[in-house]
Length: 391
Image (cartoon, rainbow, N blue to C red; front, top):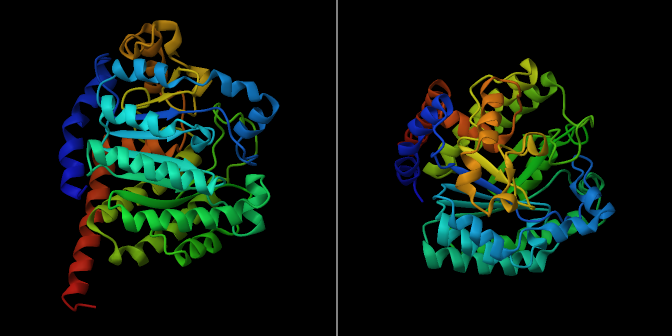
């Protein structure tokens, strides 16, 4: 998918989302669906309580939606642009390829993405290969991205993730996925770091290690207290001043490495730079600095069929459960409860730097989108001058 395809397919929706947020139109489809496919997770992260909760209550995974239930739900949904898979650990779900196939059949996403803790290297490789074949069967232009987590180098990673040997397995997983990246044009590998009080002193080391692996795409986001993560009240998020300083360093590295990247990657990196500024300002001011469209442009389906506006509000502002309304997403999406939740968010009663939602908010905020466009133009102009010999 090239840059023009990205914007041509996405922009027609944007004005409708603005109308939907301000006037409460209930028939608007979400642009982004995040689906937590399972409650199961082997990790015991210092920044997330999902794995700890699963260890204490493994029966929670028995409440995962079945594939048949997922099909009923997806049949009642309209097409989405982004399909984000989440967990728990998504690759613990043995029928993950079937879930993706159902998404391709009914939701017809233009981008598919999943994170992973990278522990089960062989299964991750096998399922990724199967998913790529499924995606290509429906539309070979749709990119599928897998993002292994890296929160430190060596033992630091294992300590933060809570699994001995996780870093070694991460390296194996990355090598396996790099081979798939060479084999499939629509497969993209990236690595991601959760910036927390446990690793903020070693972010340069992490990024240098990522580049040493030959992985071009790398992203970071602030550790957050989320109802989804069972970590509300945990002292995990760097203070605003420290976070802004760290993001400035990330921005410098993006600027330094932008020249070798493709056109769509430059657009993505420009959006990322705008995100860093907004995230730092949210942490400083503790309020929404641009309007939030959670529950309008984006929706999150939990492993048990709960529907959330986002994973930060999660259980606290659940719109309802799909099992309680005959798996009819549209009925729940247009419900009185859903309107109440949207009103709460529109009233700026919450604020967070949630990355997926903030990127959607940027696309729907004229000044922020203009900043990203100007940065993209500057990247392309600078690259053009280099190509012409104007070093």
